[in-house]
Figure 1 (cartoon, rainbow, N blue to C red):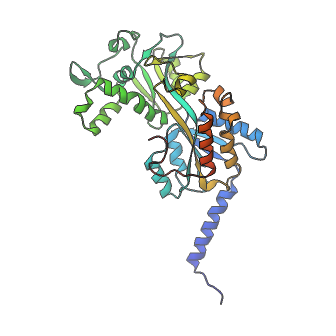
Figure 2 (cartoon, rainbow, N blue to C red):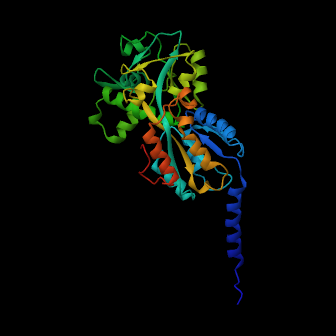
Figure 3 (tube, rainbow, N blue to C red):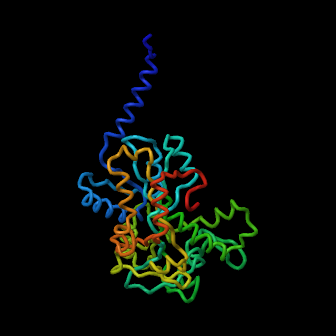
Length: 349
């Protein structure tokens, strides 16, 4: 007897077949996300095309960590990203969005470390900052004489007489950046805890007070990449900007670093944990695209190789802080074994 399929079943099978072929049809790796990871991924993409001439040069875009992960989580197929670059770990809500859209195999690959730095123009006075200084300069409301009031400070020296007597102007990343979230967690939160009586507040009130920035023009939120922040420092001489250490390393001739808690950011102080504002960097790989998108597996393995991102590598030269060799091996092993991220399992929350 010959089996008969309904038109609906045939259409379903055809749709699945077309979707699979769509993934197979594309031969260029598509990447987007963190502006911090962008220069590293761009170098790897270019070098990868030289090392593997049979593959096309991967296309690397920006858009911020949140934007890249939103694109990544839109589904499986030729019109979706293969890799999301991220300057923070994926959130549980993002994992859920991915899974709902059919992206079940999210592979977390840590590529190294970076520091978040505060920098100003080389022709300005140097800054020695603490998280409390930064929070007090940036917050919408602070404590003055035991009362929580709208931030009255206009000059850094009003906060601490040891700081420069110049106008407060902070250029910070907007909410689309992974850098912003790390800035909130590693700088604003401890600064807020030092400056305000948080024990008397509910958790919701703490979050609102500690993350609310002033809107009087003394804090400027930048949705673009670090280049836009650098441009603003060129036209606003007294501004202090938030950057990734890697970007600073490429612009030493135009920027000077502020210390944070008396420590200058460097590969050594970040690797040792001495510098307080550091973070891991990631790429997230769509497991469903491995074996379908040409060169995807090879690109990730190439990225993780010692020659590309280890000590003395081209990526270290432009500011990436390499993983220790044993940690690199563990990351590569997890990728090779295709250990997927689930809610609560990513590296940093």
